[in-house]
Length: 236
Image (cartoon, rainbow, N blue to C red):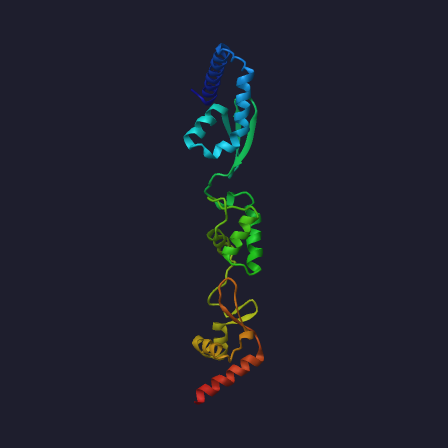
């Protein structure tokens, strides 16, 4: 049997099932109209349902929903979004959207925009935790979570090269401790000791917001001062 014949057989089977379903529907006795008293009782229940719902056990909630819902139709809108159409026994329907976990971060809705925001926030000096919190507040999410995790932010940064290399001699226009030590021809511990003793003033030092590396202001006077200090130490 070729592909066309299989499709034809499937369509005939679907038609037969639909006809049988319609015949069963026609044979179903029409429901009797509700009496005014019973209708009023149901109206009162519907008015109080939002109040009663939190007090019901899960088993009763499920049973009630089975009585109220005719069917549920799922339609995937995108890789990470599913349209859920709830058809009630009254014939009315409600539409809600669910965001199930997916495998790839790249398939998350708004992923390209999230990358741009990660870059912008990182350049402003925010760390991964703060960036993740801001992205979540802006409505972004991770592939397997309704929030953005710091790990997701870290992966995006490293994938695009937005990180500080620990061995850098300069960073954001400042000397690193390693870089200043190379200029002076000393070890990094010597530079740290001058910071501790106040030879390198607190106003001349800052911390990088992401790596927490020490950054020392580029200043010829500071370099000269440290060279004199190194000479003094060497002569004692």
